[in-house]
Image (tube, rainbow, N blue to C red):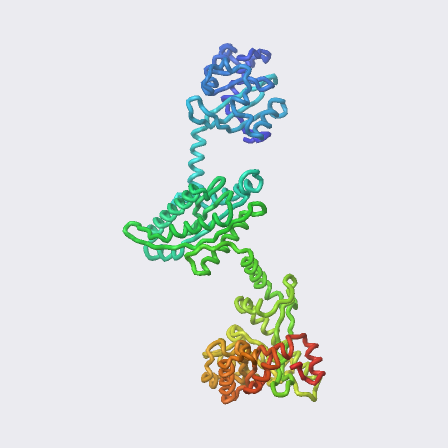
Length: 614
C-alpha cells in the first residue's frame, strides 16, 4: 500500500514496537491503553525492544541516535551504547542519494510522515547487505523510530530473475532489452558527462547464410554455432579493450535476435577504432568452426556507425546501423561498411520520391518539355520527343533519370506513363489544329516495358488518340532496346497491334543492348535511335575515330535495307551533324538544335518555319 512521498506501509513489527521505543527513551507521557493487561508493562516493552532481532534505533529531530538495540549494534559491528548521539544518516547511508536525503529531511522536520528506502550497507565481516530502512515519527512527535530489515535474499532473487530476463539463453549474452537499456543510458551519460569522449560507436552484424545452417543441419547445430560466434565476438571486444581500443566503460556484446549481434562501444574515439574492431570481428568469424564433428565456415556482414552522442537517439543510431548493414550485404556480403551520410541522404531521397510518386500525379506536379527531332537534310523539325519533369515541392525540378526508375520499381510508371501519353497527344493535336496547312509534327513518347505488362497499353493508346483526335501516324512510341529485343507473347502482340493501328514504334538507345538487326525484321519497328555513345566519337575532325564512323555507317545501311529510319541522339555540333548526314542518318536530336523546352518555345520554332539553329 503506497503512502505519501513514495513510502510503503510498515510491517507490523515496527508498529507494535513503538511503545517499546517510548519506554526505552523514557517517554511515559502516553497513557496505557485501557485494554492492555497489567503484565504488559513498560518494562516488558523495554525488554522486547532490546531483545528484538530487528535492528532499531530511536532518533531525535536532528537525526541523532538516542538509543539503539543490540541488533542495531550488531549490524554495525559495535556496542549500541557507542552509537548514542551519532548521526543516523551516516550509519544507514541516508545521505548519499539526493532523493533519499531530501525525503529523510522532510521526515525529520515533520513535513512527511514516513521514509522507506532500500540501501546497500557493508557488514563488519566484509560482505554486503541489502536492507529496507524505515524512518517514522513516534507518538508525541519528538522522536522517530529507525528500523532496518535485511532484504539481501529478496534482492539476490530479483537480481537473478533480472539476469534471466535480460540475457539470451543460447549465447548468454545480453539480449535486445538489455542492449537498448544500456544504449539509452550510454547516450544520456555521454551527452552530459564532463569526462569521456562524448561519442558512441556501434558494429551491427548478422551472419551470412545462417538460415541454411538451421535448415540443413538443424536448430541444435545452429544454436551451437550462435554460441561459438558469441564467444568469438566477446573475445574480440575484450582484446580490443586490452589493446586500448575501448575507452570509458568499454564494449557491450549483445545478441539482438536470430543471427543478429551488436557490439556497442561507449566513449568511442573515432571511426578508426570502430573500423579496426569490425575488421577484427570479420577475421575472427571467417575462421572455420568445429561443432560436434561438423566443420562450418560462415561470414558476416557488418554495419559500422560512429558519431557524437549529443543529438543522437537510440532509434536514430539503430536506423543508421541497419541501413549500413544493408549496404554491406548489397555490396557483396562478408564485409564491413562504414555509415556514409551522403549515401544515406541519397537513399532517403529515393524513399521520399518513391513514396510520393503516385500522389504527385494527382496533385499535378509533373510537366512536359519537348525536344525537336530534326531532319538532317533540311534542318526542319519533323517531330518532338516529350520529356517529363517533376516539379517537386521540396527538391525542385527533377529530370526523368531521378524518378523514372523508381516509378518502374513501385508500379507508378503505369499511371504516370498514361498521363504523359495523354498530355503529349493533346499538345501535338493542338499544334496540328493551330497550323492546318503546315506539315504536322509527330510526338514521340517513351514507354516502359512495365506499361506493356501491367496495363492494356493498346487500349490506353486507342482511347487517348480517340479522345484527343490525334492521328495515329503522328504518335511515336519509344521503347528501350533491351525491352524490345527478344519480345514474345503479350509484348510482341501489343507492339504489333499498335503498329497495325498506325502508331510508329522506335527503339531507343540502340547499340547498348542486343543490337540484333536480324531480329528487327520480325518486329513492327520503324525507327532506330542510335545511342549517344556512338555520336560522341564524331566530335573531333582533327582526331576522328574511324571505328565509330564505320560502325554507325554499317548500322545505318542495314537499317535502311530493313526499311527503318535512323535518328542520331546527342548531336551537339554542326560538325557532327554534317558527318552523320554524310553517312545517311535521317534525323538528329540534341543540343545543337535545342534543349528540351516548354511547349510555347516549340510554338516559336514553328512560327519561324520549323528551322532550328542547326
